Image (cartoon, rainbow, N blue to C red; front, side, top):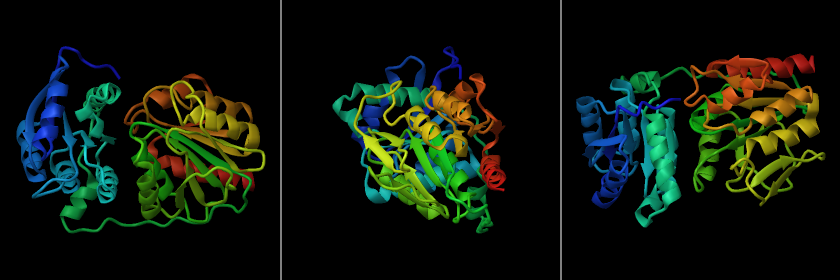
Length: 355
C-alpha cells in the first residue's frame, strides 16, 4: 500500500493520561508525514472530536473516564467510521478483553505502547509505521455496532455438519488485521470440526492468552495457546506462542522451540506451514490472511506442492494485502476469497476430501 508523502496523516489521540498523551503526541509529531490534530481525554471527547475533526486515524486507549475506549469505538464505527488503533500503556486483563471486543466492532489493530515512555525505539518505529499504514484503510459503518446501539440484537448463526474424520489439519497465518479475520472464520466453523487448527498470528506479547479466551467466547471451538508435546485434537485451535516457533510432528503433536526468527518472524507462518505440508501432505488446508510482509507465503507453496489445498484472503477484505498477495504471486493459491467465504470454502474442501 503506497503512502502519499505529500499528505500528512491526521491523528486524533484518545488518552486520559497527560503524560502518555504527551509522549504519543511528541513521537508522532517527530515524523514529517504525521500531524496530531487533537487530544481527547476520555471516550466521549473522542466520539465528539472524531465527528468534528474527521481525522485519518485515532489512537484509542481503553481505560478512560466518562466513556471507555471500547464504547467509544462502537460509537465512532457506528456513526463516523474512522480507522482506529487500540493503543494502551496500561494493559490489564479486563482491559485486554475490551481491546479484543473493540476489534469486534471495527478497530483495526491493537498495540501495547507501555515501552514508549522508556524510549523503546523498535516499538516507536512500529507505532509510527502502524499509524501510517492503518490510516489508509477504508472503513465503513459497522453494522453490528449500529444494530446494538439501536437496541437490536444481531442474528446468531450456528452452522453444523462437516464430514467426520480426524486426518485433516487447517493451518492459518495472519498479521495486521488478523485477530478479527481469524475470529470471523472460526465463528463460521462448526464446533464438531473434524480436524485440528494451528495458527500463527503476529501479536504483541502479553495479548495472546486473552486473544485465545476471546476467540473461545466468540466461537464454537476451543481455542488455546499451544504447549510443547500436546496432541493435535479435532475441534481445537492451537495458537503459536509469542516469541517461539511452532511445528507439527509426524506423531501429530506440537513442537514448540526457542530458535532464531525466520524471515524476521517468531513465530513464523512459513515454519509452521512447511511442517504441516511435510506431515499432513494432501490432508492439509492452508489459509493465509491479511498482514504486512510475506510470512506464510512460502509455507503455502509447500502445502500446495505436497498436494494440500490453499486459500488466500482477497484484497477487498484484507486490512493489509501483503501476505496474501505474496502467496498469490507464487502461484500456489487454489482459491482467493473474501473473508466471509473462507469458512465455507474450508468446509467444502474437508467434505470433498472425506467423501
